[in-house]
Length: 186
Image (cartoon, rainbow, N blue to C red; front, side):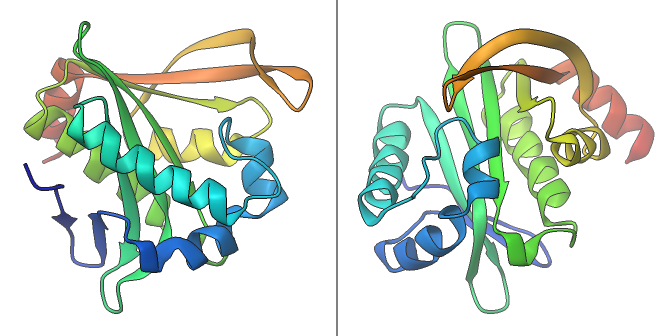
């Protein structure tokens, strides 16, 4: 099965290619990204980018993850990553994303979350999609709310990052909530 590609008026969500590695390094090698994303180290090296590309391939092949590059459609310019990590036994997925600093505050994150929610519920037929953010990353919570997700819980000392136990806020959307919201809003 080919890696899926999703297109909107302004964005493409697709396979990350080896020629995207230099831009991944450029944007991910940022302390702001590393501090707010659990599995992004600082510094972010070429080896880290290659591992990311390999995880994309293996996740798709094994039906355990969809890791999309987010590209501006006009020039196929890489802007960030959005992913769904599948729990096939429970028919749910965890969503994660990051956007490179030059592309923030342009609506890309919210548009990306909305598109991947649609992909998860309509194409993958998931029952639930959830996402978390560290409590000090307030802007990520705003993105999730603007995309229609519902705050579900605060998980105390849930992850160990940079030697500190960090609290996270978890958001969710079930298939029923997604369809009810789109019936009302669409």
